[in-house]
Image 1 (tube, one colour):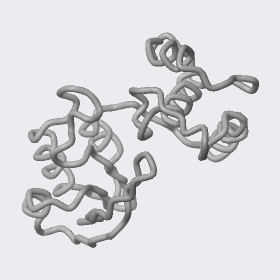
Image 2: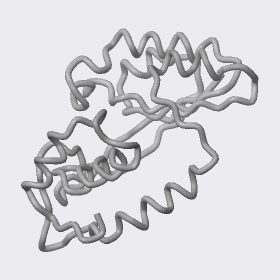
Image 3: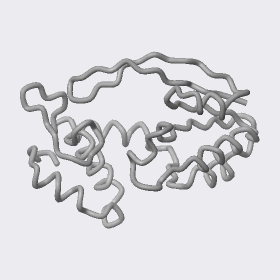
Length: 176
């Protein structure tokens, strides 16, 4: 990747490459390349602002090195959230950070990957934790109703896609 250039053909080739055919490092590099060179950071459509690039491919290798050093002694699991919570909620000191898809935007990450039933299941699991959790999500009445009873902090921030800034509110929900 050190001498990789921006290319729609490479973007399309990497996007079409099955992640399960790559090593962990190749998958990480592929993910970062697609995210950083994809329109809106979603990795679906090639889109680089050549007039004002916010990211350079030359930063990829040092970024991966820094991530590797930071996570060297960390166990990373790729599990359903329910399986992960059940497996690791073994003591009061455990902290889970949950970042589900935004309410009302679950298909942004793929069709039928996360559903309303999954939000209900997540809420149920979080309500019975031995440990604690922090959950970040968009601020919607449905979210406030579902997670009522937990601590909620409203956070104001700006979303930015293609140079357009939109003010938004998110919730940081924590408990128990």
